Amino acid sequence: MSRYVSSFLISSTIYAATIATLFYFLNSERCEAKSEMESTKVVKVSLLNLQQEEPKEAKAPTTSEPKKEIKKEPIAKTEPKKIIKEIPLTHFKATPLEEPKQEQFAKEEKTENTVSKTTSQNNENSIEKKEMVNEELEEKQNSFFAGLRERINKNKSYPESARRRGVQGDIEMKFCILENGNVENIELLSGKSIFEKSAIEAIEKSFPIKVDKTLFTFPKEFKITIAYILKGNS
Image 1 (tube, rainbow, N blue to C red):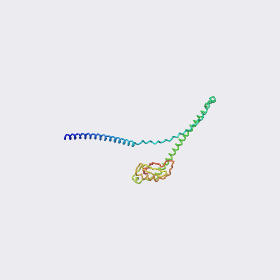
Image 2 (image 1 turned 180 degrees about the vertical axis):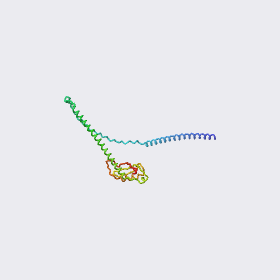
Image 3 (image 1 turned 90 degrees about the vertical axis):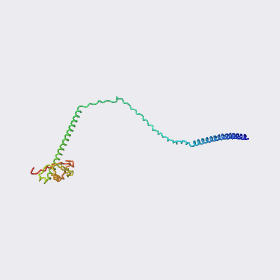
Image 4 (image 1 turned 135 degrees about the vertical axis):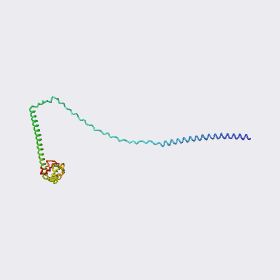
């Protein structure tokens, strides 16, 4: 009895194992088929999405360029050419040139000589006149300056301090005469300062004076030497 039971169990386990293996293989094939179907579906869906997402190329707007107006240039009218008739040289007569006469040359030389003499004489006369004017001007200027020196010497007074000590000598003064005849800018250039005050007073007392504007261009600067000498020593 035990043998039959054991063989039954063995055979039943073998049948169960074979059935289980068959069932396993069938299930695995079905799963693989399902997975293949799903993968094909996913690929198709992704391809569809990609095709939908691709942007369409934007067409550039076509702008119609304005047609250029072609201006028709006016046709220049061609004037008919003027026909110039050639004149034969036989119609012109050659006139011989007259030779200048010797008398005409002599007259022209005389006129040129007279003109040169007159111009030279005029130049000499103008130079002489200028020299005369300059000499007269110098004489007037010298006379003006001499009269001014005499006037200042008359207004001069000998300083008492210099008289007591017996001091004497020459001093050089500078001053400027204005256009209205007044004086300014009186200065001592050289000499003993003991005589400066006396010399300034003498110059101030000598002005204003009448001024000849043709002699100098004013304001005019002058320099004068004033001598201080005691009467007993003169």
